[in-house]
Length: 93
Image 1: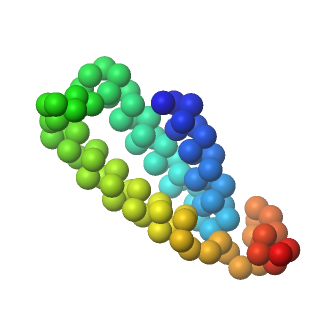
Image 2 (image 1 turned 180 degrees about the vertical axis):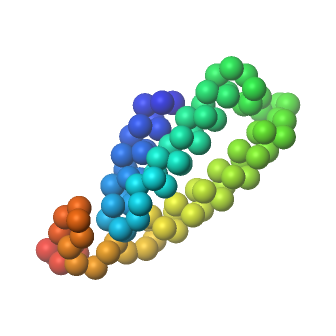
């Protein structure tokens, strides 16, 4: 799980850089995912047959975050022209 979070963080951070957004947002998303993984590991959350209020909170929050990431990183164009992280890949094409 932590390896998946690491790779997802790198992908999201790169896309946030392309969009000109602060990388702290990618760190916050990765931190929440790591927190959920740790809580599942110590069995505070993660029981599919007896979900508690914290499970429900993570489901609701995770759904909202996933929708936001899908729209922000998957549907919107990056910054037009070069930015501090490199050239615009659309201009090269």
